[in-house]
Length: 416
Image 1: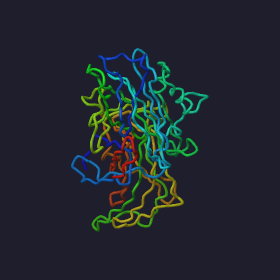
Image 2: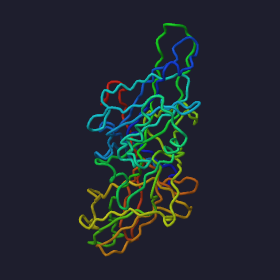
Image 3: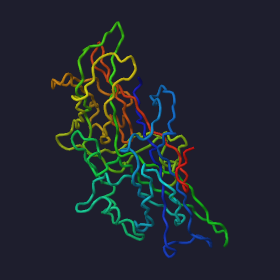
Image 4: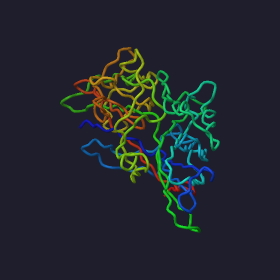
């Protein structure tokens, strides 16, 4: 299998955009027309009907696409904060989007009156209750609620709290799983978008409409473990009858930024690879090619380990004939980048509960490599196949991205 230097972005769980409205005394008119534009927001969100299949290519592209898995990956809340950038950052608009019990937006009017010909910073956060608060003494929602009133100024200190906001993984607990009463996987993104530049066209013309689609990314990486056995008669598998009682993934970061930090995408996030105009991808396929990871703490230079205990549900090492192969997981963990070029992510298994962990080969297939360093980007799902064969234990990664379905910006979910 060819080593892939791109990591698939599970791009489309939910694609959302927002813009702002400002009072007339805050707007600098262009010509004699209204200085406001109606910004119509398009969303894209997971749906059972959205699953699409595609053949695997020689570039390591995934076999198919998958939608959100279970309640944990669905959307419960959705917040939009729109900031005017000059001369100071100031809230122009904010909204909590109404959602159904399954997290899908319902009949929410996603149209906004916005000042034209301006660069907007748009902060998107889904499932905020599962995020730790960036400031002591306030819940996450209380921290974000202060940016709801129009005209609120955002200080540089507060903006840095957004950019440097982090979440830390608890030992052997899926990221975000122990936060909130009903934990869900957060999705986040920050955009810089230009609104329409209006021309002087006189009085009485219809107000222009600007329709745009943006995306959010899941704020975690995901992995599942699939167990298989080499049944080649010439190379019989080892350990027949032995049971796997534990599996672990090594080399992970212990923390990550809440928002993608200096993330680069392919295709690019913006047209021309410069902030201003979103680069919409019709089929939802997009790669994360690089990102900034949280610096590893002293003592964790080689990374942390996520362990799944399987004593109560062991996996017997036997031939499954390619059918009903046992699966364990999923686990959710911080996006992770190795600090040195000679370091790799590895998988280990425990047999028969004996406390001895046997290493598989390092993960190489479909692992992102950026700047010569192995990395696992957020919003990616690694299907890690652990195979027992005559030559020992090996592991390889199948990368499974997400694709989404467009939602009508005014009338809610369009299931067609």
